[in-house]
Amino acid sequence: MDFRTHAAELTFRRTQDASGAALAQLNESGCLKIARGRALHCLVEIPFLVYSLSWLLALIVITLLRAVGTISSRWGLGLTLLCLVVGLSSRKIKSLILNSFLRLRGDNVLRALPGLPSVNVGFEEGATHKKIKMIPEDEGICLLDAAQRRILIEGCSYRYVIFARDVISIAPVSGYALSGARITCEMAGQIFDIVLTARGHGAVASLIQTFSPSTGATSLAERLTETLFGIESPSYAKPPPLPSEVH
Image (cartoon, rainbow, N blue to C red; front, side, top):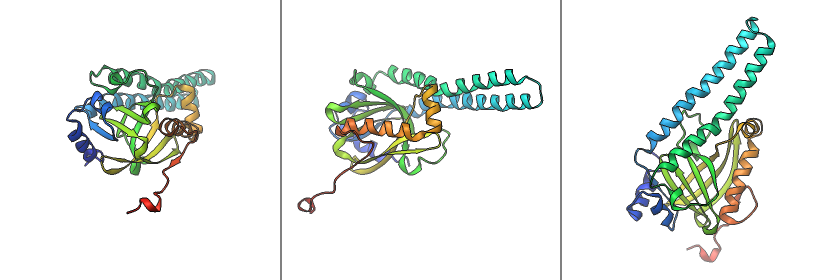
């Protein structure tokens, strides 16, 4: 069973509506499943998987052609640089296409809350975020609502809202080609452990993420903690309850 199923069912019982407007009115953390959302995610993700494999294959072919002398070193270098630029730009191209799809949905949370700053993110289960996946759990646009100390995500498969008061901890996480922020929070009565990953990079940012993934992880975590708690720090830990508060 999907780790979000229980929380989505409980949230829907409270809203009786899976629209972005209903999520925006929710006064606690929760998530709502979107009909045919996974199909949309696959529709966008699979072509770009093929695209990524294609330019990687092209790099291998160019290297082999240079090795056997079929093309000159000058041509080989030029084609290699071209493939790298195309490959490093693929994330930005995909995010633009995905954003267009998400904004075209009539009931999206972006229409319910226009004007908020946003950032493109992937959405991973915390327990499995280091595993290689052909298609991640979700991807979408994260709205940063500092006025109400919350973040809202219009994903492909689900919509999410997380309030500061429900957050237990935030910490940057990074690895090869991975820059993200791990959030532990309470959602619909259960502990939610997720990783929001930085997405939608241009060519230069993608290159930086490849060689210094911690830079992007820290940047994303800082934006989240500033939005939720008004602090300039890449990490947050909820203070333990006072003895008088423990029953």
